[in-house]
Length: 467
Image 1: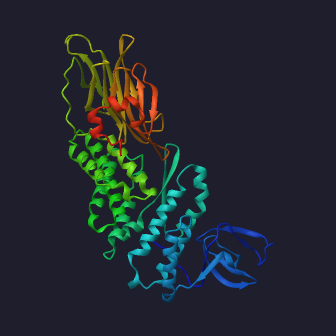
Image 2: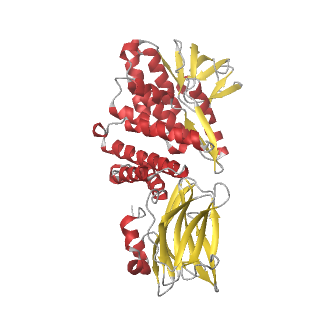
Image 3: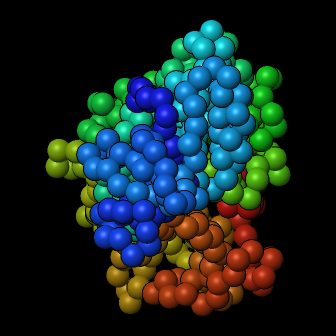
């Protein structure tokens, strides 16, 4: 809801504006005011406005250049809307813009209200939440602006993820936009994108509520009519759908249900994105979708035949675990060469043997957006399993691809992409197979000699690492 505003008001337009006990610079400072604070004007004297702050229940004097009086009337509504339109596209002025939006909604006749002010306020609330996200100290810097917008019914929710605070707008006005028959396609798309953000999904949700939420997100995205959108918004919607369908594929797989349809839909939506249509600030949404789809790329795929002699098979372990067993087909009665269990999803379709080594590689997905590469190889006369992770710690999103093997140098070729603390990193690497130590690394495979000659043809055809 938007707070009802009284007449004879002023909106504070400066941060840390001093409210003083008397109309002079040397008077006692009572408190500090912030952009968007709404005050009742009770007079003026010597370049100061005499005001009362209902939120703090305190009166005082404020320099007249620190606030803008306005009328709450139908005649003033067009001017308030013009200011709202200007502030909507001005980063750093979100609290001020939301305040003007609330003033417009109070001043405009109900029959003249469209989805535009609701859309503008909701987008500014979303942007303010993004700016406030980060460390606890960073959040404290934006706390005054969050308190300002709360007086207009703009609510935020927050949770911790990997040691960082994520602040999210609760989306009430986005829901109101979707409920308005007069809302334009772009406005409806903005609302759906605001309500389906993956980074605003509570990380503590248990599997059942999370699956239900992902189903709701997919249904919201299906309401958007692609043909009526701008090229940039259309690509954003495709990227968001790709991420949501990737989440649904993972949920189906975890429950032991077929996930091929969902995985294929995720890939199709990702391929429908035109990255060049996205602005620089929106490229991260596309890369985020790439990581999510890459993580579930093997979901629903059929296992490839294993010609041997080394083969892998799966067997149940402790409740919730799957055990991977390496055997030698030439010794059917011998004990397993090596056995290891995991709570992750074992992607048998990704299994690839490297007879020249000898070695095998296998994708294992322990989390929704996190896929590792397990390397089975012989070292010092005994077999071992090494796990290649997308990142060292704080898993957020990422994957590792097997990209080939260079027999002459005994180097494993991999592609790795990860999101860590909001930043994306992609690398192509040559690893020494014996100990998986890094030999060379580059931002593109063309910069690595062995990639040019020994990269795997199937990887080159199917990978998303070359987006």
